Image (cartoon, rainbow, N blue to C red; front, side):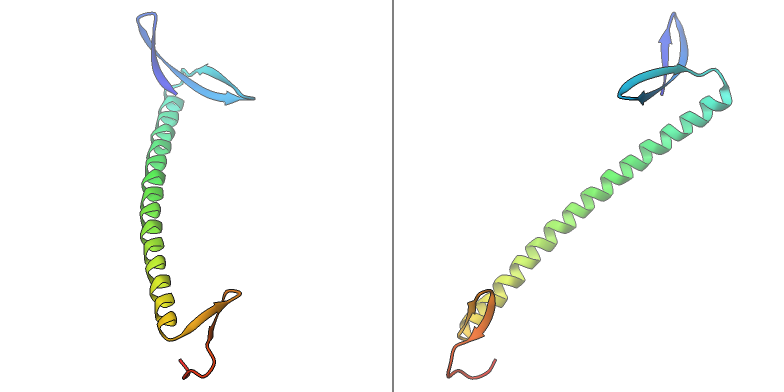
Length: 100
């Protein structure tokens, strides 16, 4: 959807994909041109907001993963210091040790 210069004049064409092919439709009605232009602007704004949100989420995920790794490492170290071990993914105390 854009104003395109043709034959030393500017025309408004609405482009859309139909069955995998791009088709251009000439739009003459000023009210429809205004509506299509507004919709195109809103779509660009929504897309920009989506990208910004996605980037913020990725940053939060990175921070969360770092925190998760830190907590897991500290928990594992604490349990190993107390004499625990893992068996099939479960933490267990060695025999003859005081409870945790």
